[in-house]
Structure formats: C-alpha cells, structure tokens
Image 1 (cartoon, rainbow, N blue to C red):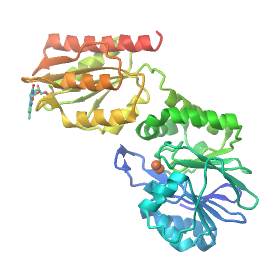
Image 2: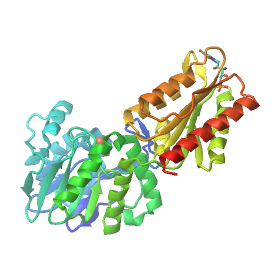
Image 3: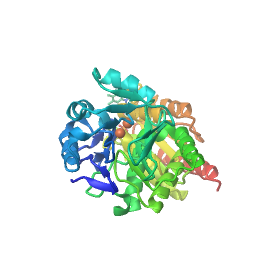
Image 4: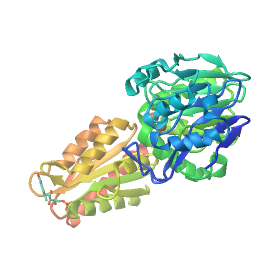
Length: 402
Ligand SMILES: Cc1cc2nc3c(=O)[nH]c(=O)nc-3n(C[C@H](O)[C@H](O)[C@H](O)COP(=O)(O)O)c2cc1C
Ligand SMILES: [Fe+2]
Ligand SMILES: [Fe+2]
C-alpha cells in the first residue's frame, strides 16, 4: 500500500492487515481489517492516531513518503486502545512531537498503559479547538463510544471528521474509499463491526449523531480508523443512516436458530424449529456453535430479531459454547428480541430452562415454554419443535406490527 490523499494535504497513512481473523481476540474478522492513521500537512504537521504495534514499520513507511517523520509536530490520540496506540511509544521516540493531544480520560489510560515520562501531553476537553496553520481542529469527546477516553477530531476547513472506532468496518482491501466498494459488501462488514463492538453503546450513538446534527457540523468526509473512508454525500448519509438503523434495533422479520449438540439430537430439533419459522414465512438461518463463533451469532442478529437457542444438557448445564455465546450476547445488550429455548437430555435436562432464564434476563420476549426432548427426538417431539418456531414467528410478526 501507498499513502492515499483524502483531501488536499490530508493523507491516509495507516496499515492494511490482511492476516487478522480474530479482531481484538473476541470477534471474527473473516475479511481482515485496517488500522487507519491520518497525516495532515500544514504549518503544524499533525498525525491523527497511530496503528497496532506490529504495523509500526508500515506507518513510518507511509509517513516518510510524504514528510520526514521527525517533522511531525502534533500527535492526536483519539483513543488509547492498543490497535491505535500500540505504535505510539516508538512514534513518539522517532518524531519527538511538540505536543500529544488526548482527552482527560485518555491521559489516565495513556499514562497507565505506557511509560509517558517526558512526553509533551496536552489534555483537550470536549469542544476544544486548536489552530494548526490554515486549519482548525475541534475535539469532541464521545465517551463510551466505545471507551471512556474516546473522542473524534473534526477538521473544520476541510469538513473532515476523523471518527476513530465509530463507523469502522473490518475489511482489508486495496480500496480506501467506500465509493470504490459496493454498499452490500460494506453493510455486511459494518453490521459485524457494530453488533460485536458498538451495540451496547447504541444510546450514545444516537445521542452523538443528534448532537452533530444540532451543531450543524458540515461533513464532507467521515474517516474512521478501521476499513474504508466515506467521502461522497451519498456515502456520508449512508453510514450515518445505517448507524441510526443499527442503534434503533427496530424489529426485523428474520430468525436465527443457534444450537450446540454432541450426538445430533439437538441438531434435529434445531432443523425442525427452523422449519416452523419457514412455515410461518419468516426467513431463518441455522448457526451451529461447534463450527461457528459467538460473534457470528451477533452478526446474524443485525438482521434478525428472533433468536431461538438449543443445547444438549451436559453435566447439568448447557454446553460450553452455548454458555459463552449467551455470556457474549448479554454483554453486548441486544434489545427488542423474541426468543425460545430447546434441547435434548438424558436424565436431568436443565439446559433449556437455563437458556430461557438467560434470555429472560436479557429481556427477550419468550412466547413459548422451554422445550426438552428425551435423547432422540421422535415425530411428536419434532412437531413440538416446529410449533416452537411457529409460536416465536407469530410473536415476532406481532412485534413487527403485522
Ligand atoms: C458428558 C455428558 C454429560 C451429560 N450430562 C447430562 C446431564 O447432566 N443431564 C442430562 O440430562 N443429560 C446429560 N447428558 C446426556 C445428554 O444430554 C443426552 O445424551 C442428549 O441427548 C445429547 O444431546 P445431543 O444428541 O444433542 O448431543 C450428558 C451426556 C454426556 C455425553
Ligand atoms: Fe477501540
Ligand atoms: Fe479500533
């Protein structure tokens, strides 16, 4: 990759990570990702964010194609998570910046994560504005979007919003701009990213978008720190509207059946539940937790408001991947869902009830009782599974206003 000019004298200087498949060790990233950093050439040369530590050389290579890294005057740290700050200590040593800007909470994390002795840190608060020559940069704190230290940087004269993790997507590709990709490809990546990272902070997303709208901030470019950059009016509107949609979590008439099975009994039940959804005209996908990751379940939930979970009982509990899936989902706080629980058993059969309880704790609507079958589900059991699918489908349709 080479550096890419986003607007006159504003460059993408980040790194494309074609290898990463386990983003931040909790979310699958089947298409890789990028760590975007941006360089602005002005009276003061400013570097916005850095990259993951292992991409230090790539960052320096890109900066060096534009200016001597030592002529960087300011570094802005919008967020201290290591995918953006990992290269910071070596960059500070190399560039010897005059100032390093971060939010008040950024200072707290920066001084804990790194040895910042001698670093020229300057804390900026929400709404602070600095001059860098022809340009002015305003910092807006976006606390808990998605860390306490998170902020975004707005370059006034160019109407460029460097949005850090907000509006990111896990995509590794040679293209740097959304208008060089299809919306379909982007939407899939945006959903996966949102549902596995941003979802619990949906209320903050809506607040931030409302605030930016109220402030009347003109935005020509949204430049996130992962994935591609939005630079056309259509694409800026596309990403903002998509985020509003994701955050609203309005009911969507699709279903997912998630299951885990040792000897296939629960898998048979899962298929029958899916048949019930289909009979009720609700498109349904199946996710087997022995082959799929719990982040795949979250990504599927970006299109589906009904989720039914099935697990065999193993040692008086749902199986381990199912437990992990439920725990992962609880932390991500999905809203407005309809669900159900099922599974086979051999003697005590606690799993379906425990799953139903976990879903009730997440405020799922549960229109049917948890369903359990002794060892190998027979014709009557499978008919009950289909009814479970149909009952959840009916509740989903009612939620969707049908
Ligand atoms: C290691 C192991 C532990 C089990 N523990 C329980 C249990 O605590 N309670 C129970 O009802 N069944 C238990 N079972 C029985 C399974 O729930 C039963 O075989 C079930 O039909 C398996 O469903 P599957 O075909 O979807 O794997 C256990 C089975 C295995 C292999
Ligand atoms: Fe982050
Ligand atoms: Fe990030």
